[in-house]
Amino acid sequence: MRYALTHFLTFSPETVTEEVYWALAGIYAVLVVVSASSIFSLKSNFGVKLAWFVLIVALPVIGMTIYCVRCLIFADYSLAKQFGFGFRRPSQSNRSNIAKSTTAMLK
Image 1 (cartoon, rainbow, N blue to C red):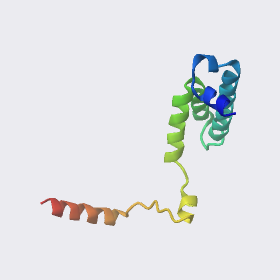
Image 2: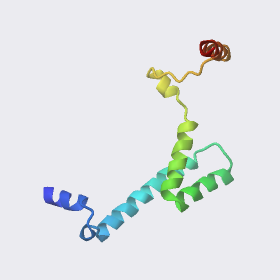
Image 3: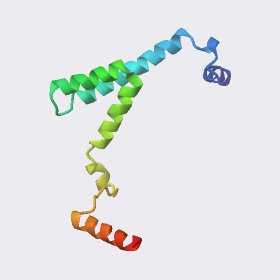
């Protein structure tokens, strides 16, 4: 078993067989299905959903990376807040106080 695993992980030309290609195709298909289900559950119009889907299918790695970043930006962090992770933004008055104190320190 150790030899098979080591032989598989060396990535030499003789280890890249048809089964490896089928496994990669299966992984890609699962990622596309999961991404598509996420995309089509968005609350936006069909054109936006279709554009995201085409981006993910046409540019697999880049499209999924961009969609992942988009999901992280627009995520609902209420679950994280329940576990004690604070994602509070300072209030406007607090931000102006911070700016004033920073300006005073720089003078």
